[in-house]
Image (cartoon, rainbow, N blue to C red; front, side):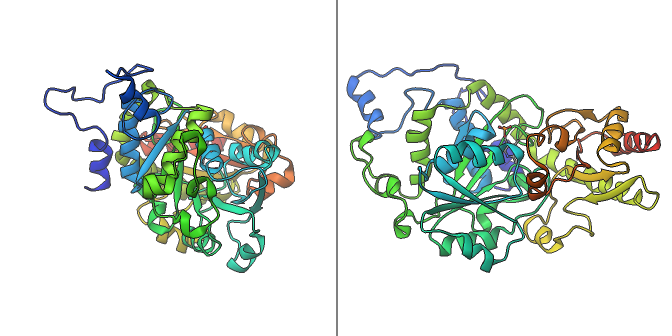
Length: 425
Ligand SMILES: *Cc1c(COP(=O)(O)O)cnc(C)c1O
């Protein structure tokens, strides 16, 4: 099936007489006739629902849809994108291990890595998304366990050279984890370029209506944990499951199954069935919305660029403009479009940015991005305000950067709003 058909049809396939629409199974628990049947579930000997912290029928259908959209073997949904990022790494790292991450990542992820996970004893090295293979080779350590990056970084809009990072990670026997939130599987499927694990904040385009927080971790099933030899948590007995060896028992889905049965079991942070239902509604139209977001964003980016000569706009950044710094990465990884987010600077720096934002009428100032309504944010005074100027610079965020999330409204109304706000600058 094509990706647009998958958006609508995958995951839930009702049988004769069953509800046409994915039902919300609002139950924490599931009944079995014998203690033995229940025991087999606990021992992971058989498949089935027993407690919604581990799996729920509504959530399960949406996980299957996302796994299908990304081309993975198994997806585990979480309560937020933050939980997905944390789980994706915690599943294969412990205190003393080391992670290499692109520095061009979401501010919340940067704080999670740089502070919270460092405090847990996992060390991080942040590298430029434009690093060369030789430089990247030099930051690997014997205890490095994975490499992390974002397909299109939020908010700096760096496009990751997925193949380069994947190939180098694999040379060092570790997987590449890619946060694919901004591109969505409609525009890029990182597994096709060698990524091993994909994460999302489903809160953004996937939901698309700003209704439900959520995240997901998808396992490609392609990484060879045994051959690597660096992941005993997957290749040696887990005593909390009577000595099960994930790679032996679950083959290609070892990473995904362990994430669910170990990390989710111990930490929680599961998706609620209600949120999964809302997310599924969003996914059904993801394909249509992403197309419109991108079409509108290209027009906004071009319009903003046309205002550079009169001095109102100082710079425009959008993967899809001919002036974008890595056109070859855009044509390789994002041939059908990138995302709806455009970054730019307005005259007057930090103060000009605030003045411009407050003059907008259609575009709302919100701490959100990537939903149907056009919205705008000034990272330096909101999402990234806890970062120092140097850290801001490392994340590719300048003090005058405005993150403009182009919605799916009529383009003329969006452009009118921008031009009226620029007039009062
Ligand atoms: C928003 C976001 C996150 C965090 O997701 P939440 O759902 O807000 O927890 C992670 N990565 C990216 C790229 C994001 O945009």
